[in-house]
Length: 202
Ligand SMILES: N[C@@H](CCC(=O)N[C@@H](CS)C(=O)NCC(=O)O)C(=O)O
Image (cartoon, rainbow, N blue to C red; front, side):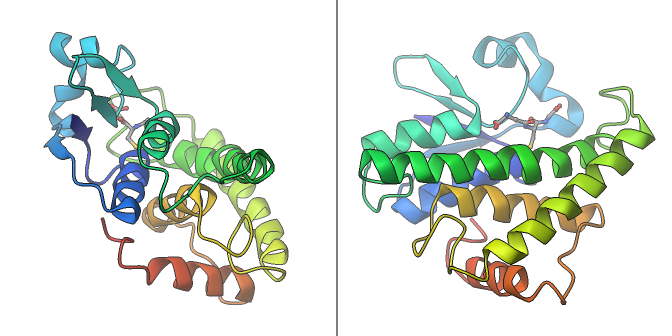
């Protein structure tokens, strides 16, 4: 297997942390997206959307979408579980993962896409979209701060995929002015906890 990677990217980081949590080592191939190596005909055969990460399998097929890659790795290597073991746990963790994807990671991603130099030549940047996305992210943070008063991690007392999605969003957030205000004490505590894991810098 080969993981086609983009080291600074939010979505590839999810997969690297996930792999590190599982103790997996998979060959990595860095794609020079800054110089458009992700829009060559060869790369588009792997992912017609030209996005990273992509996991190329030994039979030549490819899986893109970071959550789908993690699901595949979870099925191959169930321990330690990061997506739940019983149907109820799995659904609960998926619910929180999707909430983090839709309400935190996506707005922070939009903020980056509509304000960064990296995306300037890749899409039509719309500054009000960036502004709206930033507000959405802060609204989610306020809610998450209240939720985290009740438990250690986002989906309960164990570290899961939902935490990985959220922590990677905040890493990108730092680059675009989304920082957790110290008065959000529960969210601050959670971010310090997940950032202290040995896998956080994978
Ligand atoms: N939904 C996809 C999003 C992938 C994505 O947007 N990747 C970004 C990096 S974080 C990318 O490849 N950007 C390069 C480009 O748009 O040219 C996933 O979860 O994998």
